[in-house]
Image 1: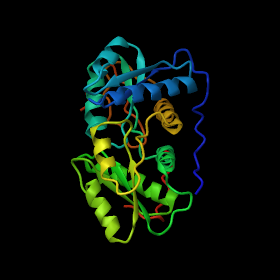
Image 2 (image 1 turned 135 degrees about the vertical axis):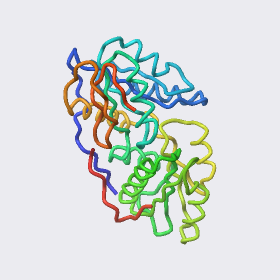
Image 3 (image 1 turned 30 degrees about the vertical axis):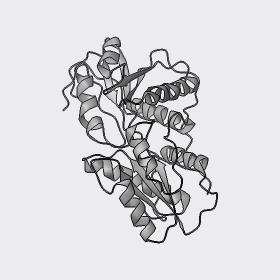
Length: 287
């Protein structure tokens, strides 16, 4: 089936000189491949938008850590775009609360998923792994993600699975490496029991790491690579940045930050106090 990517204008090569910086907030990983993968993605973003200041901050495990990146911004303005694929605790609390402790005027954008561009990247990685142009009734996919205890995160993953199912024309079952069910092996067994002899695992991870490796080893057939610096991921980061800017201008110091909504960012603040799928499922709106 043919992928349809919305036109988002993220390939513009000019940005206002006073535009807020883009801070990509990655989780962090002990796997040394993760940092190099994220840096490659940021390089692609810089190529798409050369005049835009692009910075990196990690929640944990890797440098630069987000507090160090925010400290270096001083009293400047920035949009924090989570390099996370659904809306969970990190997006709702950790990132806004960290940002609120620094004088920079910041805004937290929505996570990357669900969105058609994310589905584009998942589809492309599956195709690279050997997914056929025309899948049969014995094909199915397990969408493997990290997992979260936050039900909103699982709901977002389920929407991504539904959109990928609509794209591929086969069942796509979301599964998780931790904190939620079903696990990837459980999802594989469930699909096999339904008669699907060719079950692929689609890696819904931004970079290599323990969870991505663990999920890939459970694949009975093919497993796609993490999303990494796929072009659609770079476009999606810039789309989230642009949507954050489009929601309004910076506020005066001392305004409270509201938690990022599924389709919109938190308010500017300096500083602030914040505290499955079926093949016929609809394609999510580009949010």
